[in-house]
Amino acid sequence: MPSRRCPDCGVTMEEATTRTSDGFELHLVTDEPKDGLLGSLGAKEKLNPITYVCPECGLVRRYVDE
Image (cartoon, rainbow, N blue to C red; front, side):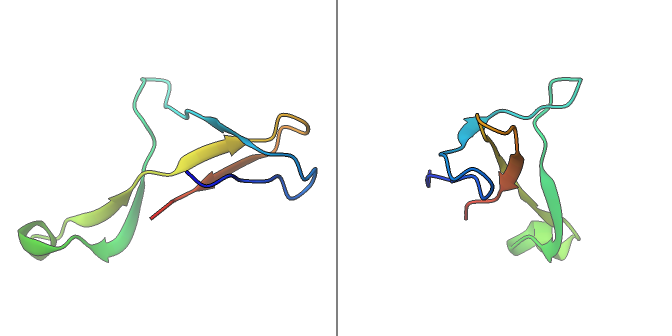
């Protein structure tokens, strides 16, 4: 995982887990179709973002590392 720095404080941000109230992980669904058979059936690409929190100011950022 790349090291992320807070744009406000300049300190290294800490990785955090983000889940729904039901305990499911959050994900992003893009407009891009999946490859192969699932894509031909209309399935969309699903990305798992990583959440980072600044320990100084509390800024939260989510990134998709591809």
